[in-house]
Amino acid sequence: MMKDASDRPVQDDTKPAQGDTRWLRLAVRIVLGLIGLGLVGLAVLRWEANGWHSLVWLTGMAVMAIIRIPYASRAAGKPVAERRAVITERILLASVMLGGTVLPLVHLATGVFDFANYASPDWAAMVGACLLIPAFWLFWRSHADLGGNWSVTTELREQHELVTAGVYSRIRHPMYAAIWLIFLTQPLLVQNWVAGLAGPTSFAAMYAIRIRYEEAMMCAQFGGAYEDYVRRTGRLWPSIRFGARTF
Ligand code: SAH
Image 1 (cartoon, rainbow, N blue to C red):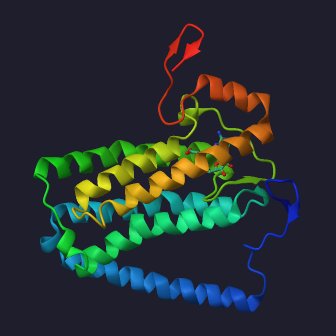
Image 2 (cartoon, rainbow, N blue to C red):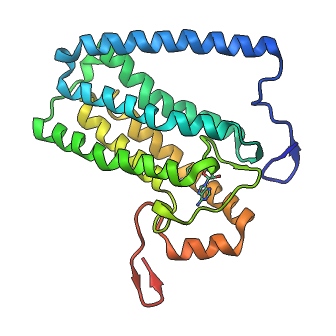
């Protein structure tokens, strides 16, 4: 049985409970997958209306999935010992999914938010496309370095290890730094006030709320080792040290 943040045992209600539910979940996933593929197809067909940069955004989403899926399926087999803020996490994840994927995809496929389109110069879209290269490198390296300790929500695995090497040696949240970069390119690639800004806005809310309880959870689990780690690292970029002071 797992424990929640207040140390009370809680049921792991995310495990597929019955065979029936498992089939239902699979069916829902297949239907959603087919709808997603249909929307991607329509978005590709509408590329001239949306601009070449929309194809860069679509490719970027595919690259993100290709990087994440193998690590996610490996981590899925590792038992969870503790989960934090389960309801809050679900709401935050759903809003990031909506703002970062669903709204832009529906807009590119259908033009539903065309009334809110804007046109940026080509060089701005080029900057967005170029920024995706370091962003995806960091996204990949943070998954590789975190290994089986990765999770999509804030949780601790059984035998969770504190990772302080690789891209985690100078930054505590390299994966969030990568996601920030990816979402900041969204308004440059999806040039629409609604569909372009929904990603960075929803991720900003998630980051601001999650970062505190994620760090509190790590501190409660690893104590002094995590406090030392906090002292020598920055959250999203390496901290600069002047003598004993860290900035
Ligand atoms: N915030 C990190 C990790 C995101 S994945 C980043 O941006 O790179 C979220 C999970 O990673 C959390 O539930 C936590 O259990 C785990 N985690 C975060 N930092 C970690 C670290 N330094 N070592 C091991 N696990 C970590």
